Length: 131
Image (cartoon, rainbow, N blue to C red; front, top):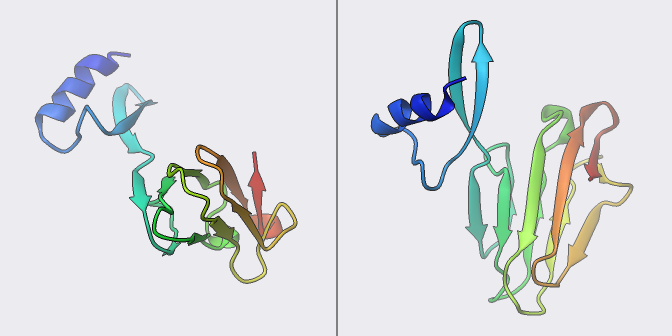
């Protein structure tokens, strides 16, 4: 697979930033394709997450920040990473919606810098698994 060559060709078209975008090389028949994955964003206020929020950076310097997960039933297999990057003592919360649970709980809270949780949606059980 000529990922580097293909990457250069796609990047030169301006649709992918080779410095900041994470890419996955996949083979589709005889063609090699690069797919952009894991968009990341930093948040300082409460957010309702979606599949577009693969990597969430929580900055709680101004106060607690809560992230509401999308429904597991609508996002089977979706992986989200939530990481606190600020050094303050304010909480970061991860909240389940509706009947969803996060490893048996409706929410989890943490306040230590560099703590992260990786969660995967399990639609069959309305569950977010911490891995």
